Image (cartoon, rainbow, N blue to C red; front, side, top):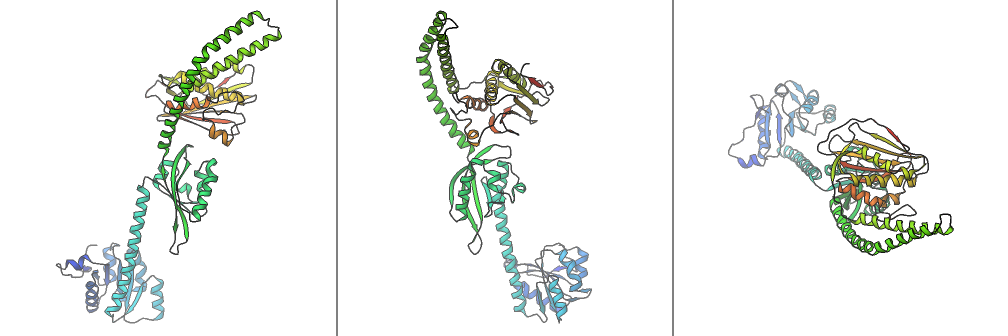
Length: 515
């Protein structure tokens, strides 16, 4: 505040640096009696407070005083008004200040009114130095405590906002009280959408919820947990792996009030470890399959040759012909199995070219015409106007759609409806959903669907979906399985668009099975 002849800083020795440095409070003294003014300035200045002076309420209002004062000491009766009339406007001008009223005499009614208006203290004249010093010292102490609390709160807030750890505070029922900025950035959840919600139901994948509730209850009971790893659901449906340390927050009496969870996102580490383990397994599988294929090739060739010779000698109508055909089918199945395992174990080297996705899946659906036979099967398409251009290895991507379509045809009873939705995000990714109207997958099947050798079919190697995952990830994308609306299985893929491609507009359409 600029000081004028009306409001001025009380005179302090300019060479008394120690007194200025240890100043406790910024005090505004409103007093029109020069003797009382000088007495209070001397008392307050001696304790290191900075004192500014005003002689009337008009001085304050006319200068538009800034709200920098910690304390206002004012005479109850001033030339242009009394405290009861002036306090409401003074408090709005000085929202951070405490108020002490000094009065020559006081009646019960005016004192009660002053306290109702927010006065901190009420002192009678003549002012005893020890009284005013004690009252001001108490206010200074309270201000210091409040400043320290605010400082610690700001520090805690800054730690929460700048930490690259995931921080979650829960109440004792598991509801979210607070999350930090890094949590919202990594997981996509906005704090205001999570506050008051059950943390485990919203953020933990369903298969892990029971285990995490046990950990939470143990923490509520006072047991500190560390190194707990679990998946975390993001708003886009992906799962990130986080390692947590949980502890309790307590009140002044030592009672537990909240649960503090601090986590580190280890998704990249887990994926790197899984990839290394997978590569090791693939190398072992590849070596094994190569040896098997080498040893089996001649035997399978002899079997097939012998079968063909037998077919020449045995009439079609003969009962023995069925047994021969069974041997041929078994030989073909064994050869297909060896080839599928070989494809799974072999390194993926991509030969990319820019194509439109709908051209790829339509071609694959056409390839499966014999597999569909006379079944009531329909492919339903829905894609954005750009046609969804991608940079992919076409043969590999055809294999992805072939495996997905074959699984749907095997799982669904007629009528079979396979829907492919495809749309761009306007930037660099394309989202592809393939869903069917079959029985869908249970929780265990969804969790294991991409595991090698896991299958829901009566026959098969269980490598089809593992191959799909490897091909999609080799393209820099990802794939996951969710429940389709109304039942069935739904596979969600993300693929990267090419840097530049000629875009052709296409309309939504339906492709019939007999097309």
